[in-house]
Image (cartoon, helix red, strand yellow):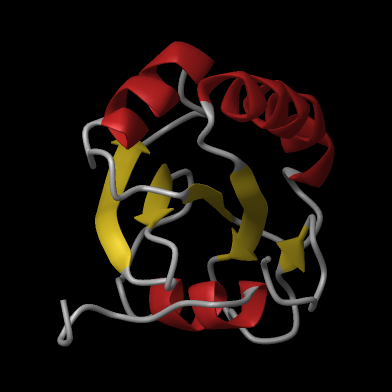
Length: 128
């Protein structure tokens, strides 16, 4: 697990996602272990927010080492999808609590430029 990418904060997740080359409209997840290593990074939709059941079905594939999930969507412009994802993020948070796989954050990342225009529902605090 030593060569797995370590992510411990929203800024770390955004930095990782910047390098992946996702296009606007892409939504997906990062599943992390207790140390913050990425167990699974997966695109779930190229055009819309994924179904909540599909999101956690994919997240649970990572196995018993999974301790939290980060959801993300790539927006075409600043502020475009923040309101759209707020309710979806609340559903993911509730479902994650029930399943024992908490939603650590939901990141809305603008396609270009990334830096300074993205939003985290958890702000800059580290995930606990």
